[in-house]
Each structure stands twice: as C-alpha cells, then as structure tokens.
Length: 318
Image (cartoon, rainbow, N blue to C red; front, side, top):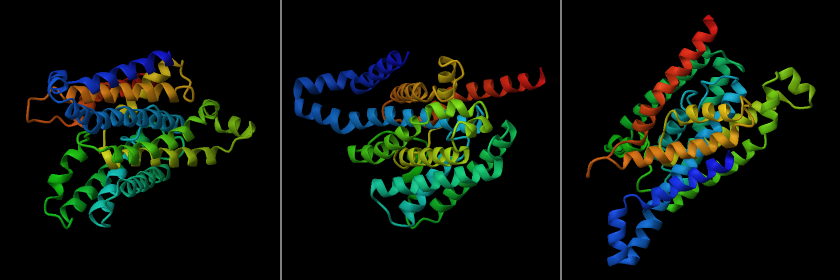
C-alpha cells in the first residue's frame, strides 16, 4: 500500500511539473534554456512545496490525533496553523525579519504557543467538544491578532501583500524558500516518525504506555514541539491551508486498520497527494485570475469534516 501511495505521489508531482503542457512544449521547441528555467525556478519549487507541505500536514495531523486520541485534532483545527501565521506576520512586519529561515522560526514559535495553549485549555485527552471549542477560540484569537497586526503594520500595503499568502499559495516561491520550509519540516517529520510504535501503544492508555517504560508526558511534549516546528516552517512560506491535516489521517487509519502510529507515514503520503491535487485544481482558473489553495482544500474538506462530526454524534447517541 505504501508503495502504491509513493507511486501516486510521484506521478502527481510529475503531472504538476508538466501542467500546463502547451506553453512548456512551445518553449522547448523555441528556447530550451527558458524552458529549463521555467521548470527549475517556477514549477519545481511549487511541486516540491505541494508534496512537502501536504506530507507535513498529513503527518502532523496523524500525530496530533494520536496524542489527543481525537479524530478532529489537526493543525488547522487545533489553532497551530493560525498561530504560525501570526508568528510569521509579527516577525516579518514588526521585527523586520526577511530571511526565509528566520520567518520559519517565527512561524514555529507561533504554532508551538498555540498548541501549548490548546493543551492547557482542552486537556490531555480532550473530548470532541472541548477540543473544538478550544481550537476554535485559539484560531479566532490568532486570526484576529493577525488582522490587527497587518492593520497596524508600517507598510500601508500589508493586507494586500499578505492576502494570497494568508489564503494559502505555492506560487512564485524560490528554491531557497523551499529549503527554509521543507528542511525543518523534514527533520521534525523524521523525529515524529520515530514514535510510530509508541503512539500505537499510547492508544492502549497512558498507564499501559508508562508500564512499558515510556513517559507519556514527555512523548506529548515532543510530539507538540515537532509538530509546531514542521507546521510553522511551512506556514511561514506557503500560508495556512486547512483540512488536509484532518482528511489524510482519517484515510490513513482506515488503511492501517485503526492503528494511529502506523498511520503516520501513509497519512504523510496521502497529504502530499491531496495538496498536490488541490494545487493542480487551482491552475484551472481563467487566465489572469487566481484561486487560493485554501479555498480548494476547504471545499474538499468541509463535507468530510461534517461527516466525521455526524459519525461521532451517532456513536454517542446509539
């Protein structure tokens, strides 16, 4: 199954490099040097970010759902994406930080603060209503503070400059920005992947996990920190993209028969496929118009989110 998912991710990445094909074919015939520049400087960063950011959302979503023991936990619903956006805006407009790596650090700090606040408000193993309310409160607060920061920013064009980024965008990113987003995300993702077996044992209960020689509190802290680093680095470059971190783990757990730890890698691969497919859909916009990436993922993810909520309600009432 993993091999099939890897193949699908590579195929959709290749399609992303070649789409749209007509102008690329014309450039290959008339000016191969410009065609090479188009592929390497424009399309390659976009494809790498779609695959890498999608994998990050899927992996961190699966890890957060495992430690909260709740299928509604995801980077956007827990407020970490909004916190990362706030951190990046404060770093860029008020601290004067311009380097991609520095902005990634600000995003990671904002995401970490949001997740720690969620742990404090909702508790370790929050029920669905507590998690939703706490996550919604954090997201709304972070979103309001982000808007306030942009309104008070020294630049009068801050709102205009940040609009595409806030809605999620992979366009016009450089390879340097790709490195700033994906290198920290990859390091944090490998860190999380180490806990695959431990997260499976956590599903049996914290007492069982402690009896096997693991520290549940330390595990929770490390998962939160690693998730914050990964999500914060990607959000600082690509903006906030919703629902991928919710959908991918749900699909992955179905493939792994409900094992939350074993679902980490499949969730990453499914996330990469989902975000790459959403990015391809944004290219269907009329010439001169742009469809924000977050709009596509929200349109795809909202029905699934509602289905999960209704399914949990039916379980409670049956």
